[in-house]
Image (cartoon, chains in turn blue, cyan):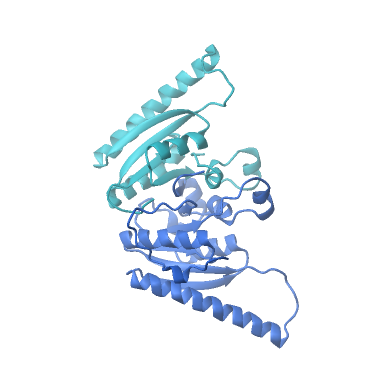
Length: 188
Length: 141
């Protein structure tokens, strides 16, 4: 297993095919995109993101993608209310993460989008001109990978900006977490 | 990556190709701005089970070694000129495993690789190495 996070840099040709904003090769970081699905690995990635942002004086955009499970035609009031309730709940959780980042001196904003996770993520990266995507990965292999796929892999293959994948967080001794344990659910 | 702080060590895995120059520039930029040291490495890809001492294989490996050594020496010189502390390594074997092994022995806190971002049919025809990062460790492709 990979012993530390991996930063993947797209080649010039690949960059040229993507957003024009990504044609620079400098390592200047102004805006970092961190997708969050509230899993342990995404929150670990956010923890890394906070440290990178602190060091680089960058801002963080948190993104949660609401993936459509089915395309039902149920537009009745209870269904609409349920959807609104989910959205309100997510907004609350993202606000708490943004507040924790603010207390660590990291400016942040958050967004909720719908659609396929990889597509939404890449669209946001392009529209917000992000310099780096930091995301967690479950590290699925074999059958599990075939069945469930990997959002991180899809993003990594198609992104025109550098992507830092975090699977094995390795914090230094004495590291004080930016995200308190109250923000991290015991199970997901 | 006990990111990012003093004494941070970045491992750049490169095949010395034209495409990897972007990753090199980025790694040097990051190492400078974070005050990190850089370990650069290349892997002479050689499948397990083949005899490295067999004459034809030896010729192949010697040729690769010569090429890679020149490229790493040049890269090292460029990084040193930027004021970055650099070490270099050449390994032989399966890239993903060798990069992972060097990352462990060097206690690297961040691995950097370049990618050509192959998708679709490209992926089926030509393996995309960074995807190995999720299971093991990536190598440049």
